Length: 119
Image (tube, rainbow, N blue to C red; front, side):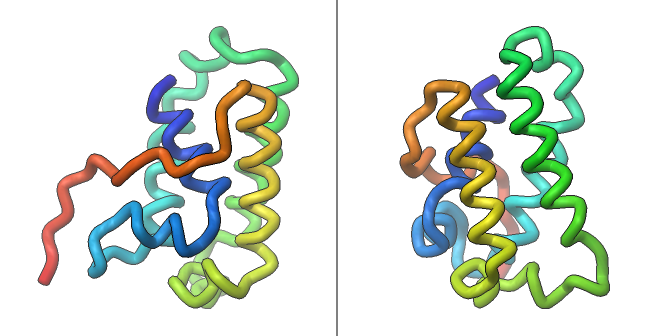
């Protein structure tokens, strides 16, 4: 559940705050999507822990993320897009709905805990 809370909060905060969650060399948009996908892989386990309303909100958020996935939408998966894309504004709004249904604050969840290797 803590990973779900982390990614929901990370998706709900501003682009500037999202960028600060990761090392400079990380593609933040891609990383947020990868973490989201990883968390959703365990959604079956989480279903028993969340309300039906929250689950529906999670699915709506997932549908939005899936709708902009793929190589044809690569322009949406850039740092610039985090700041400028209406798609990312919509994702933030949907994540905010999930957070509210879970009674979680809309605030930075703290730095990502992954191991990142880069320059």
